[in-house]
Image (cartoon, helix red, strand yellow):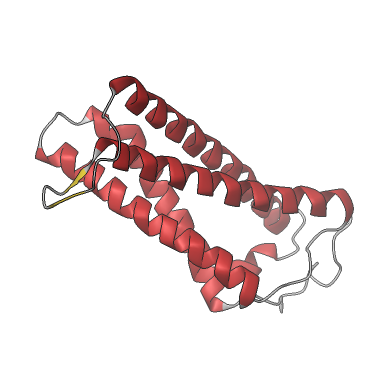
Length: 182
């Protein structure tokens, strides 16, 4: 497994720029919170607390959409580009994983916003999203199912991404995590 000798054993690893780093960790935090709410909110009895959880989910979903757009724009125009930590097949896998994460995040966000708009979701009982569909239960169920599947796939790929980063850091000891240290 070829790794860049520039990073093996070197504690002076070049880092990503602060904006890239913070957007990365904020996205991770948002994904964890969104996924946990999505998995557990229906366990809460119907009422204001449950409605509040779903409101947090919707607001945080819109925030994640904004962060995703910001990340893509930042990475394309302003973010620091670092040399790859691996070469060959491992580099190709890492690149494919990153593109897959961005694509899945985009799908999750689009499906989530579509679901919220189709339902005409109320946010904290203060603001209602416009309902852009008939509210048909079968369509709502399908949108929600696709959103949930894409979210679960995103979490699975993100876990593989995290496991690979930990492998780099603690098995190969190439200080890869230092690149994303705030």
